[in-house]
Amino acid sequence: MPYSVLPATARRTPLGPNRLNTMLGNLAWLRRGFAKAHLASTGEHNAMEVSRVCRKVNYSAGTYSLADASTDITALTKVATGHCRLTLAAGRFTAADIRPQININGTGIETKPYLVRFEVTSATQVEVYISQLSSALGAGNTWAAADESFDIALHSQPLTATNWDACPFGTGRRFPTDSWARGQTVGAPGYFSGVVQDYNEMLWCQANWRKRFLAEHDSTGNHNTRQVARHFVQGRFRTAGTYDKIQQLSSTTITLAEAAVGQVTVTFSAALVAGISCFLAPDWTRQDSSAGSSGNLTIMHAKVDSTTQTTVWMYRYDRTTDTWDRARADFWAVWHGG
Image: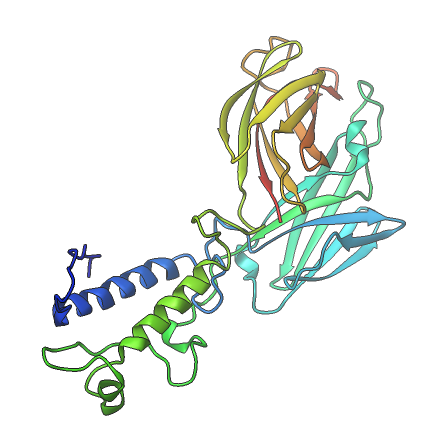
């Protein structure tokens, strides 16, 4: 049933059964649409493209720890140097469909590139392996296991949705399913007689649908959850010292500046909400004419310096000399915040 536009009414004009039934139909339409990518029971996003959990993992003094608690990542274990095990909550992920995003963000990225890989061993366990270039820049291609802080976002297939009628709306509360007819009351007598649902029942369901919506959205409809990226930019190198902002999607103004070769400062005009994670994707460099700029492997890392600044560090492999060095590259970046 499509969403129907209701005509305006006037004082003393009866609503009538058709208008009331249309209101019920519209509410059902809105709830069905919301449940396509959200859990009716909690309001949480429930789609593969939205991460189930996004957190910053800190490494210090031989221990991995979450920057802030999560009910989805229940434990972190340092198995060996460069090997961090994530234990996940049961029933929240599907082993065959876990897709991590990972960004190494510790201070080590300022001097050397890192390689990271993951292995999903079960629906409750993910292994993260980290290596750092052990050769000097411009002098080799040797890597060694290393520990470092990182951002991680875990995506997984949608959870089994809870039916709206099974949600905790209150004792005896369910979505009105009967149709009102001319001459019937929409008050308590109709509800308790089983002939027609109570009008207050519809209001109750509207209030609870609103509550679910506001769980991960603000009152204007914008996303208000850490699991959804809320800031995006595409950066393109133009000339020494200059990066152009090709595209931006953000509630604040994003500015790009090249501090040095392979080092770009990203500045926000207003502070992002704490609990910031950044994820990058390198792009081939359209304006850099240096050898290998468009064909060799590029590694990028992002370090959140403050709520208004992030620094992107870039390294490129030279297949001719079998070495790594700082280099320029175009890139895509998204930021999550608390």
